[in-house]
Amino acid sequence: GGTAGSSYQSTVFYARLNSDGSLGTFTTNSNYLPGLRGQQTSMAANGYIYVIGGLTSGTATQSTVLYARLNSDGSTGTWTTNSSYLLTARQAASSVIANGYVYVVGGSSDGTNAQSTIYYGKLNSDGSVGAFTANSNYLSSGRGNPTSIIANGYLYVVGGTDGTNYQSTLLYALLNSDGSLGSWTTNSSYLPAKLGIHSSVVANGYVYAMGGY
Image 1 (cartoon, rainbow, N blue to C red):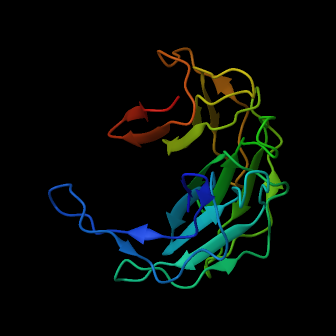
Image 2: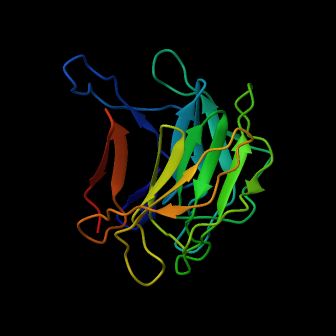
């Protein structure tokens, strides 16, 4: 998905990882997304890839969840629309998978008002996702275009915008065994700059926040 200029896309590209860290030539997957998608979130788990929320045009925010099986040659199977939707439509959210649950963090329903909700649903063995639940502990403020990561039993939310101002704060909460999250704590160390529309990863005990606006 994504945008090419002003046009939303339904294509899926994939490439093999090489042992030296480089990537092979990209291939266009024969199974396109069933609709155009930009500002969605994606993740992979248990042999399936997921696409959550996003936009099909400049204003049409989506609540659907799409999933497809990952094939051994790198391609994906046909895409299925999950029977359980997000509780409300979301664009510019972040998402992560942990302990058999998928989490959708923040985002916006209209491209303007950042949300503080977290939705979570259980991953099923057939690739589908169970009914979504709104976590009882909300973020301390709305976050659009944040990033989220999982490490050491905690979910972290890095930067983003509250709808007006970009943020330098990092929030974290304990992952509970039933899929819910504990109360949110604001980390004592902030990012060195306010940041949104960035990417972040965790590796070898460190958090990396890259690029953004």
